[in-house]
Image 1 (tube, each protein chain N blue to C red):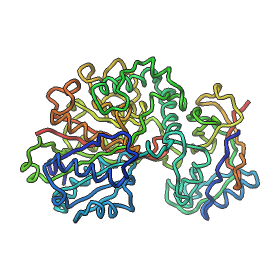
Image 2 (tube, one colour; image 1 turned 90 degrees about the horizontal axis):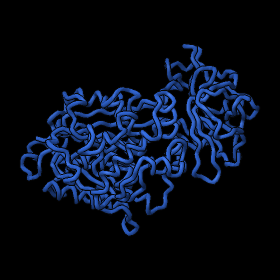
Image 3 (cartoon, rainbow over the protein chains, first blue to last red; image 1 turned 90 degrees about the vertical axis):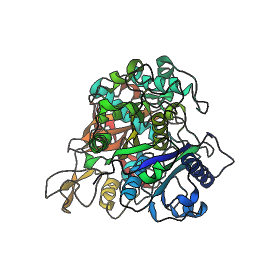
Image 4 (tube, rainbow over the protein chains, first blue to last red; image 1 turned 45 degrees about the horizontal axis):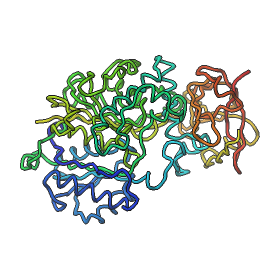
Length: 389
Length: 128
């Protein structure tokens, strides 16, 4: 049993807003849903499967199903933080392959910018029943200083430098200059990054992604439905997911769950890293990209710093074009959750609908990768491999 | 350290640890079935799934596995993972230190740090 070829991404939509003080979270979810359905050439009445994560005003999918007045026969609210939506795409393909639904809708939306959330530098609220709560909350682990600890260890173990990490941001900024919606459309240099204020050693402000409102949606359909639609078909050919945690106090913070979700996705797809023409890599921080690229097999473990340097991730310049919308580092990071926009830009590339300045030539095979929650403790990793027909 | 430390959420599973901490004793959970210490503490061994867990006095000695100085807050502080002499690596803070002199691999020793209306929590300081 495989999901290879059993489902297609028929519709995508990225909300153009980056600041939405005048819209509710539910409204943003509905707007991205309608946008993706319109893109696919489908309507609300066609949807029979709905997928959402912890950003949806829950509990679970029921409140949003009611808001949008959907009639559903398959539901899923898998929560892996920002990595959730690639898992949803894979789970939708599984459900379609089993006949549980025909048209699956996946939505993400949030407004941390309007709500003034100090996303990276304050601790997230925690349920005291979470078993790790007492052993982590007193120490002030936040998104920024957690990922910073992974960067610090990567530098110690492999000699990775701040200037190498900076190249990830530089490449993203070269792409963002062509995106009229990008929050940070200015091209930056390695010096700009390493001279920006230190947030949590060794990560500078420009090593961190933006905080934005917004959202996105995907519509996943069975092959018969995809063939009846007008948009270029994008086929799901492989997926993998993993949770990596601290394993009772025996762990290596320089490796992510992508070391397991990546090989699983490649095996299902029957392709290798060298075959991939374009990658969307979750870029919560510059270090996140380096670690995931290593774990996915685009370079050897520890060689990620050298791999991303000198423009190797810039479309038309380097060997592996990445995040051609500007990614979370420059474009947006709706709801503090980045894998939805990773899938959307991969679909644009495969359709040939990326900005002409960053469109990858003959882009027939793409990979989207998400790492959600906290890299320094426990995180979800999701990998999705997509093919143009 | 000026940062206010939120009290740990004490549960039935962890109460013995926090009672020991109130007496300034640092204990680690050790499985008598497989002999391994683990972190964070739990009633079921994460390595062999036995429930034969004992709290044993620990040396309070460790080395810094990794760390980061949180700079963009009113009171900067150091988050770290410290590998204990007993084996497991634990999330903690490094206190009583020069931020710019810290290094991975550096030896550290235990200090209990007061929390707001809760038991003290284990932290570490560099060995002079």
